[in-house]
Image (cartoon, rainbow, N blue to C red; front, side):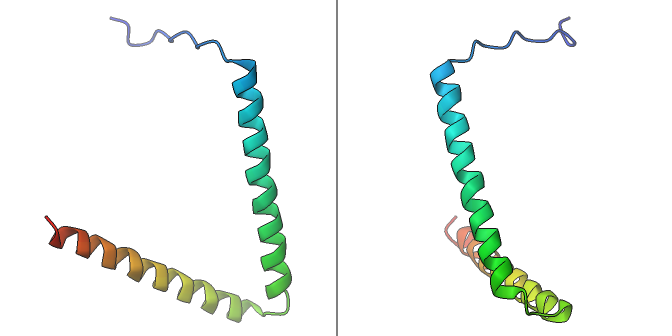
Length: 76
């Protein structure tokens, strides 16, 4: 039985790895810029306002997801 034997890692293509790093850096850079923008927009909000906004956001997108789930069962 070979339950605990590790599989050999496949050789990584250096070009593919460089591309993956470039894509990951781009994504992280965009996330950082968006987070900084949103922090600037909400820096004057107090804690209660941020909690209310988070709850509204969560309820809105939760309701949308629930709608799509229910809609998908109707098509079966």
